[in-house]
Length: 336
Image (cartoon, rainbow, N blue to C red):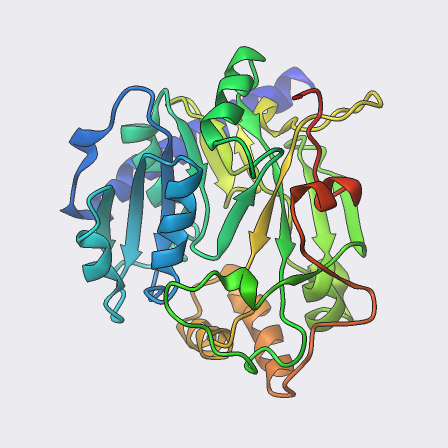
């Protein structure tokens, strides 16, 4: 990278940090328990709106793998999820009615909270429908992974977003609050992925899977990005640029090996496609708070009216992380 481009990226990082500082005024702490946070705690940051049905299992899953404290922004929920979160002893909650879109889809809010509370901690940044799977997650807690990353002087850990879906119509099996969503959304595409390198930020750009196959079949290049860096040893100098797709400094995006080896990586099991999805997609389409004039949700609305079945004869049923490693969707690298 040239000197000019490097300088421009430093300016951009400074601009995003200043923007996050300004956006702090949009957040109101309604349950601040950050005084409980210990120096070596693993923290989870998330933005949510009307996800009460998902929250019990979401919190349980991440507590079980080793998250110590949750820092969550509630964007004007009216389903009781704010009140539910406020009752959780290991959750700090901030409330805002401001535009999700104008906060760069929540990135500004979380960048501020990570600047204020995440410095020096391993930070997990995920949505309530995303579940991090990493090598040996069935036998080792998340802290075993972060300890190894620390010992290896690795500051960031990537995870491909893997869209999970049911067999049959999306609305055929009702989801119950507190239920493991993978009991319903247990299938995924093992192939059908496009990967290219982003020259500016250095990250890999991944698209494909069932959303490209079903909702963007005529324009797969417009399908949502599946590359994520959801686990970072945070420093106040860092900033997310676009969701968790990429960060600055750009070195945090170099989570792959270009010389023939493999770096350790994980998968985010994305359980969006439950029976609640149709109503959620309609709500978000009406709110127009998502990227590119909610183009993604327009595509969902058009296809959902036809009651699509995302399952196909090439669909794979999820078993465990070792299956994903065999399929080349994640890697344990040199972590043994």
